[in-house]
Length: 470
Image (cartoon, rainbow, N blue to C red):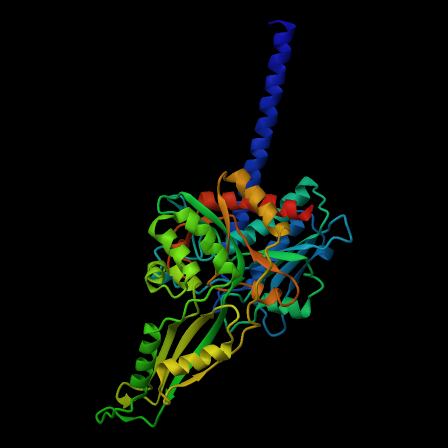
């Protein structure tokens, strides 16, 4: 072997060694992320039987192991809510004049009964290319990514210009629960102060074959509000029925709601969405989008878009029955009948206006409509500036060349509802692409593609880095 050949061989060996070390480090880092994700999913954080405080403590322990001092993180527990706590933490920036960015995630999840699920909802299961479990999609994947980001940045010795803050909160999924983001805005505003925040809300879109269609960013959302329908009367013996039956009044009222469609409304957010998507989807759907943008009362085009539940919800206020309760005995006429109607209110419309419209729809004085509770302020939009959009487009186009980034109006609601009015504009962006069925979030057998979670991890790691060095 010549001297040159030996040098070449040694260089190649060193390259292989460096590549192997890097691969091992990447594998170790990915396994750590998966462990964080698994720990979050397998910590039950439902309101009925779960413990968000425990989940927050476990995430704090991981940050401490990574070298974060107690002075840079805090598990907060609101008075009277011992199991509804959360975590705030910070990686300090080098520029004291640069406002921080906030990584926000709720760690509570929707209720899940084991007897209803194919798999244990509180065990992270990998099967056929998917992660299964309650919260795998909504939104413990992103919560795990945020924790993982802080660990990776510190591990690398990364020194951002802006401070990078983390807030894990409870109470997003249940209207009657204490909302952790709202609590922080009111009680720890300085600790979460940021120029803007990043959270959930919308994902990337996949078609039925798993091809990427578009990456969405939440610019605006609806307000979630419950209305209670209640009918009461004297009741009586079931052997002597009368027309004035509380259940009949209630059922007729609920049925009227089921047949009513609120009028189409357009604003900056859903106009931007349908403008962008019309070019992507094309065909009959694309033509219908273009037609509705020109004429929102074009019934034929609206009917085409209404076939898609997401598009239907994005165009208007929606109200739907979610719970029923009636009667007190099997052999008695009901003295009380109640229904919960959950409305997702279009931006700019008031709660009182929807209540008045519901009364008009049912047209029955026997049915009393009340607002059982008001959960925070009405949602308002976050301005989509180039400061926000450009880094998203940059990372997205590097990872998925040709992908379109589309602003959207989210039919659901996020914790941005509480931070926007507090002066922290908050945007929904995940980089996680989901199936057309939405991953069954809030339903049975919630799932998300494993590849999508790992891609989302890379996307958000790079995106936060870009933002932090602006």
